[in-house]
Each structure stands twice: as structure tokens, then as C-alpha cells.
Image 1 (cartoon, each protein chain N blue to C red):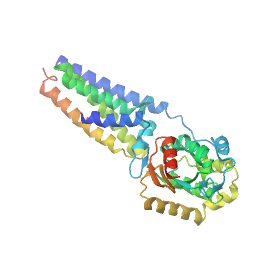
Image 2: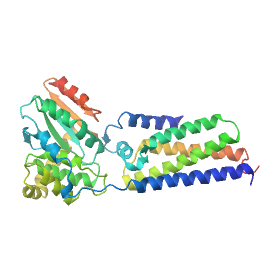
Image 3: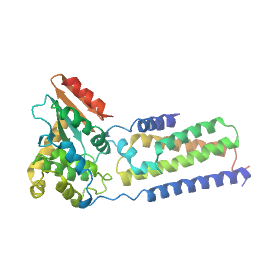
Image 4: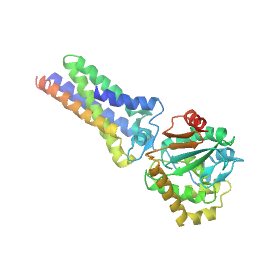
Length: 125
Length: 230
């Protein structure tokens, strides 16, 4: 839900014309407007929102397929988030606090997804 | 390993491969941008049309005695300022600046990086010949990727050569003088005094008071503020 909130906010900002300022000491507008924050022209904030929605859906699906969906979406989400972190640090040279918060949430979601799979014994039984 | 284990392993490997492929293909496909050379300066004709017949003074454009003053704090590298240059400034010039209600003053800040400082010095040098506004608008039309060295000598010289009424040799000399830097220090002081912490920030003053718009979304917001203080 937290991830949905973060990416929902960023998606809304983008839909309504983007963050309307370059903030001194910040970087959200810079990061959001960067080519690195898009995959084939689709903003990572939209992709993040879809990913979080799928994670939420996976939590509602009982059994193996729910756990698999949760794991796959969180792995993909973490990879995209790590890519964006790398781009922020070394390519864009601006940090977006909202994107960092999303990375933390993604990592937590991955930990939960792995725990679900391990606890259910999917890897051994 | 169990059947479920193999399924999980396969799905994770597949998603990693897909994500990496998407990132690699997207980035390599999007690396086609190139900075314009001196002979490829964009936007000069539009700025000539925009400024035609309007008095320019330092960083300002518009009638010196206009009742409303619009100060736009910018960073030359700020992409949102480029959007404002395209979507807001033409409406302000065509409306209240042209009819004598407002005078627009560009206030260049340099917080986004080294390219910002190089570009702002060039703007300040142009302002010494009363072409700060025109130079800024042409610069935005040619804005490149942030802190990637897009503010080249070739680009700046090309913009100077495309700025109507600018003596390029005098502009070049002014860039290395103290006056340009002093002007930028004065802008930074005004930004601090007004609590400016983002660009573009419009500070609009007139007989009816003062309006501050940090990150204007569209021209209507700025035009309404001008109307409110006139």
C-alpha cells in the first residue's frame, strides 16, 4: 500500500504535467524528466504503480501462484529500482527521495515474497 | 528440487533477463541525442519574433515604467524552466509585456551543476549588452542533458551569434570579466532574500501587492497573478 502511494503520487505528478519545479537540493523533477526514468517512453513511476498493484493482487491470491506472482513482481521491481538508483547516482547526478523510498519498499516486499516461498516449502517439496 | 522450485527458479531467471534486456535496449536506443553545433542553433527565429519591438535592458524585457515586475528565477539546466520558456514566457510576452502592463526580468541561478554556471555567466555577459532575456530563451531552445557537458564553447558562441543585437566579441570579453560574476552573485542574494528554493519561481510585484509562484504549471497561473497585482 505504501508503494502504491509513492508511485501513485509520482504517476499523478507526471499525468498532471510533472513535478513543476527543480528544487534546490532535490532532484525529483530532474530524475522524473530524465530519459533514464523511462523504458521505451513509459515512465518508471507508471511501471512501479502497476508492479505494486500486482504485488497487492499476489497477496490476495492463495497458494503457490500467488507466491510466485509476488516473487516475480518484487524481483522485477527491485531490479528496476536498483537501475534507477544507479542512474541517479552516476548518470543523472540527482537524487529523488521518493524513488529511494520506493526502493526500500521494494526491498521489503522482496524479503516478504522470499519468506513466503521459503516458509511454504516451495523450493524443497 | 521440486517442480515448484524449478518453476520459481525459471520465473525469476526469466524476469531478470527481461528486465535487463528492457533496460539495455531502452538506454541504447535512447542515446541518439546530440548537441547542436554553432550552425544548428534552434529557436533564434522564434526569439527574434518574440522580442521584436520590445525594449530590453540587462536581464529584462518590457517597458521600464511598467506597473508590474515579473522576476523569473531560473537555472539554465532546469528542464522545467525550459518548459516554462516554451509554454509560459511567450504568453507573458505576448500579453502583459507587449501591452506595457509588465516587465519580465530573468534571474539566473546555478545550483544544478557546472554547466549551469558556465551558461549563467554567458547569460550575464549578454545582459551587459541588454540581451540577457533573448540569450536565455535561445539557450533553452538548445538545452541538453543535465551536467553532461552540453554547454560547450561551440554552443554558446553559436547562441551569441544568433542573438539579435549582440556584439559577439564584446560578449566574449565580458564572460571573463568580473561584472558577469558579480551580477550572478546579486541574483543569488535576491533569491536568498526572497526564500527562492526552486526554479522556475516567479515573483510578481505591482501596485496590488506581491505574488510568488514556485513552479508554475501553466501560463494562466502567471497571467492571473499579474492581473491580481497590477
